[in-house]
Amino acid sequence: MLVIINSLRLLWCAVTTARTPTRNRRAEILDAAAALFAARGFHGVSIEDIGSAVGISGPALYRHFSGKEALLGEMLLDISERLREQGARLATTADPATAEAALDALLLGHIDFALSYPALIRVHERELDNVPEPARRAIRRLQRLYVEEWVTVLTELHPSCPPARLRAATHAVFGLLNSTPRSAGELRPEAMTALLLEMAKAAITTLT
Image (cartoon, helix red, strand yellow):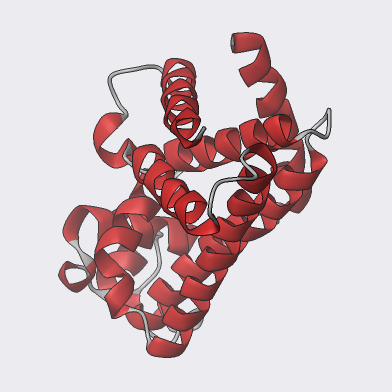
């Protein structure tokens, strides 16, 4: 199991490294805002709070974002787009290129996201309704596309299973993996990765 996990982690790192831009001030602001929104809620955080967290004045933050709503929208759009793009690549670049390997790559990729960005998961769960409507529609569209990457792979593994059931199972697995804001912390990341991978694969076997 650990050999498989390590091999898949190397694939995931290679994919994400090739696509991850150099860190910049906007990214620092987004990271700081995610942590603050997760801890105190969107309405409990001011522009001045976010600016202070990255060492700039509140008004200076407007050079980067037009306001808190725009910042929140970009934060959730960015991670939704990254998951969709990475999901599409992982579903097709697993080696060997089998449905089982693709599923393992998708699982490990999402687990890596869930363990790396628990604050973003909490913000998405609680604050999506505060995103302006155009951005909210785009986020939901990206998320639907990401789900369909999983459904495509699961269809290869369970061809007789109705798509609606595969889609529901995918959302259920996301619920398990996205529990990290509450479930992670006591175990080392490697142990938590193995646990989540084992539990998610066990859940998916119920589709047979």
